[in-house]
Image (cartoon, rainbow, N blue to C red; front, side):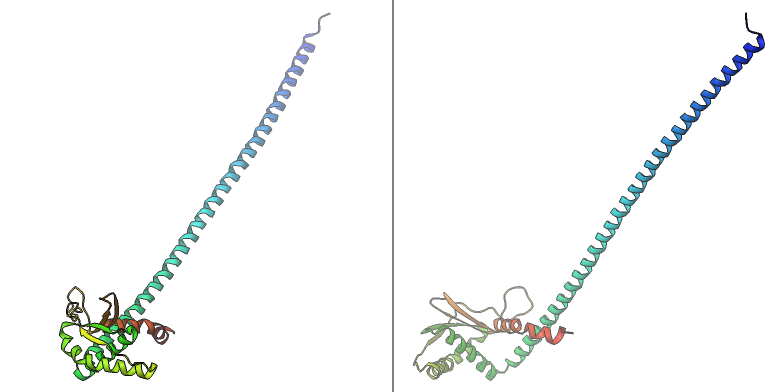
Length: 232
């Protein structure tokens, strides 16, 4: 016997409700899963963003540290160079003052003769040769020629006193190889004075010019000058 219409309608409603509930549960399940996946992806994106920001910050911090280190090193080097230049300027000033004082003193002919004689004797004692040529500036030739006899005698005297040996040396003026003229400020070689001694056809020389001796004295005195002027 067929079911009553009311019973059929009730069954249909129950089926419909069941389907709706299933759909709702499925929708909620899908929504929860989607939300979970969204949260996971969101966390990944956030963490990735944080890592990128942290990496950028570390990179920029390293760049700043490097720039600061370069700037600090540059400043230190600049300061050192300025100190070196200042010291060099002072030494050059001392050298210029010494040259001026020497030129002033050696304007006195008697002191000039004594000075040149000592330079020649020092050179002879280093060479210990029988024949030596003396080179000088053209303007000093007369003075140097006047010193050759006394220098030779002093050389023999010193050797006899120090070694007991009797030895002489023939001194001649080398006009073929004159020293450069006095400095005038113009470009080119110059010489403050003094002598160069040569022997063995010029293969052996002793530079006893004022320029050479002054340079040697200043070089030896640099530690003392630094201690006196730059120790503080």
